[in-house]
Image 1 (cartoon, rainbow, N blue to C red):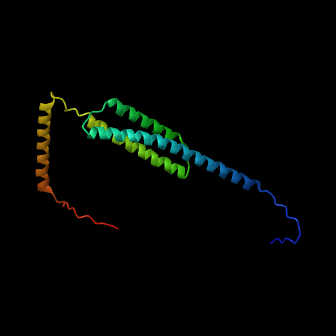
Image 2 (image 1 turned 180 degrees about the vertical axis):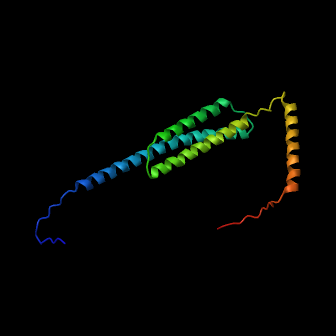
Image 3 (image 1 turned 60 degrees about the horizontal axis):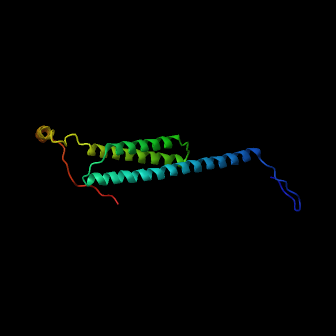
Length: 166
């Protein structure tokens, strides 16, 4: 154990390895903050695009038809945002934020695809009305066959009693 006498001079020595470690930690913090800022910028742009997707959904629910070009453009813009997120190099918390945003963009693209499928109904024309009737009868007959077979072989009991947890 070292002892320092009263009124003696103390000269602190600088540890080069410790200094480099602190410098690397600062650079790492800057890298994480840059990555978080980049993710935040992409998140803001995705928010604007998601508002457009919501407006398309309200238009479809009201019964109006939307041009397929709008679906394609929005899907492409969201794919560009996915590429931007993929180009961000992040560690730690920024990486988690990036992963969450990637999942969010992918879910918006899925919603957009389902809206596009709902918008383009292949049996909506008057020429296809007879085909639609035949197809619906075929589907109903298949459903009837499945329910009859299912009632003979059913060993599963379906209940609506759910266990609730606090």
